[in-house]
Amino acid sequence: MKIILLTIGRQQDTSTREAVADFTDRIKRYFPCEWKLLPPSKFTEPDAIRKAETKLVEDFLEKGDFLCLLDERGKNISSPELAQLIQQKANESCRQLIFLIGGAYGVEESLRKKAGFVWSLSRLVFPHQIVRLILAEQVYRACSILRNEKYHHD
Image (cartoon, rainbow, N blue to C red; front, top):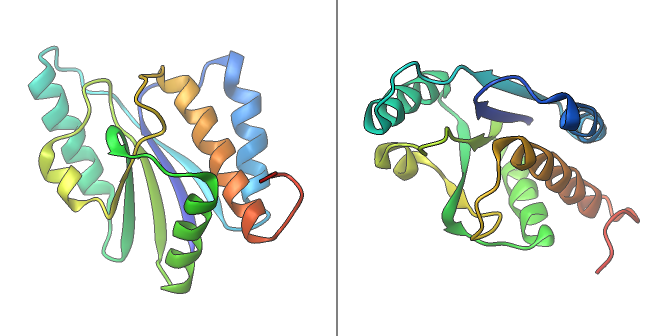
């Protein structure tokens, strides 16, 4: 199984780039993993932006992919529960486990319905750059839990 960290937006800020790259490299010890960056919409109206960006994501998805959408209205889970989700998808021979950080205005409801899981990191809203770092760290943490390594403490 391959893990895709998919985001809509611009390149990573230099302030977080190294940390995100470090955690991404750590994930690669367990699963093939890469970041995919989709360009933000050039529209100016939120509904048009959401529609265009949803279309980009839908065009990116392939049969057999499992989409985990990060959304403040999603389910809040623990790190061990994230590890269970990743293990379950690996056991099911999922081709690609895709974690999506949507655009500034979110995604269309149609894409939310296609997501196999909608995950909330917090009820708080974070800048996308910080979400990228949190996502990479949490996926790494989940992988270390699966291997019973010392990184995560109960």
